[in-house]
Image (cartoon, rainbow, N blue to C red; front, side):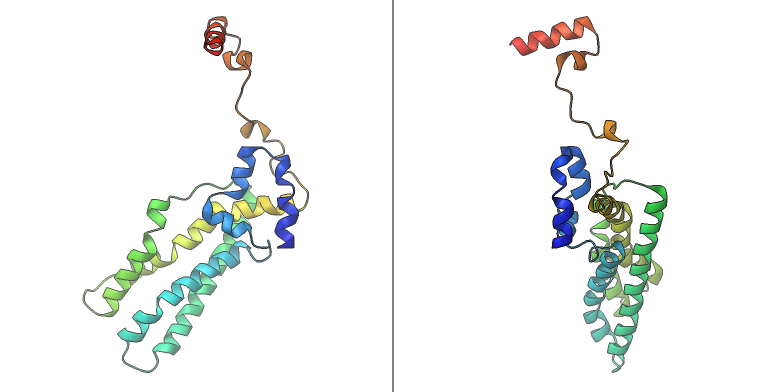
Length: 203
């Protein structure tokens, strides 16, 4: 927790919009509680692979009659975690090159995908229907690495800059400035609009 505390102490010097960009929504805020070395994008992505692997235990156990189901599950789980880890590392490399800021991932699309993929995998393993395996694994594996690529990897890069006592928003203050409050600035030199604003303030 010492690592996160060092950069958290510098948040007060930032504006509300900048803090919102750094901390993100509830999921990202949970990751910000971790030390930066532990919340590395590759680790977060590999953790998602672990969660997917744990969800696959029952389908592997009951869909395969042989005693080799555990070996197959361990092998495939290792592949899933390594693939997710590499995708997380690739996302961080791309973000460091492009300097891209975090964006909110399409939750209504990404969040249901693992559950749909898990359901389709269960149907496929029980041989109720013949389903394309590529589609199933895409639905299972895409949401985690996609979240890391769009949201967490850019945010982690900004947090590392803040940790190094750098301002990640330097030169971009105009994009994160607080809302204008002065009537003359709001009116932009328009006398008629200024008179309307003044009248509203008096009321």
